Image (cartoon, rainbow, N blue to C red; front, side, top):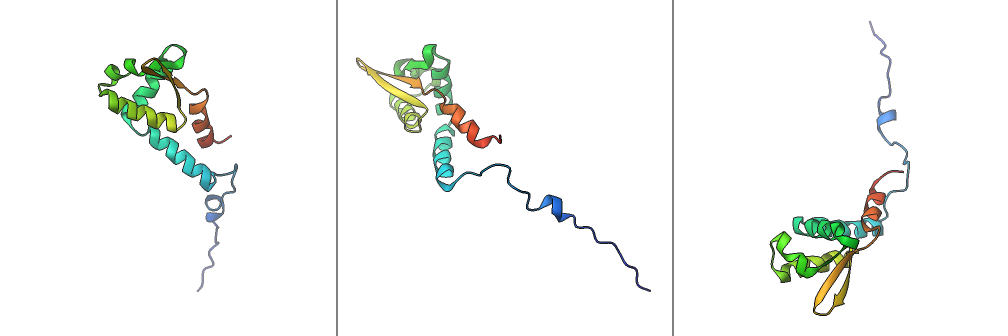
Length: 116
């Protein structure tokens, strides 16, 4: 005696869901990876947060050395990486360099990752 079983397709809802927004292009992914690599260091995150918390979102490199406990050349190296990644701008005043948070730099990263 043969028993007929009903077959239910369970993959229809779980597989191949339609895209609800445009995914990152290869160029956007490359740029985002470079940007996120700049943030993937505890010292750089601290430096960025100190600059962001400073008056007018600007700080002198001389004021950033002690809080992170690193040497001036190491702090300058990290600030250069953050500047190259587009998070900070640099201006020179006398013998000191001042770093300012680029308005919207952090917002651009979050917008790429959040579905609208």
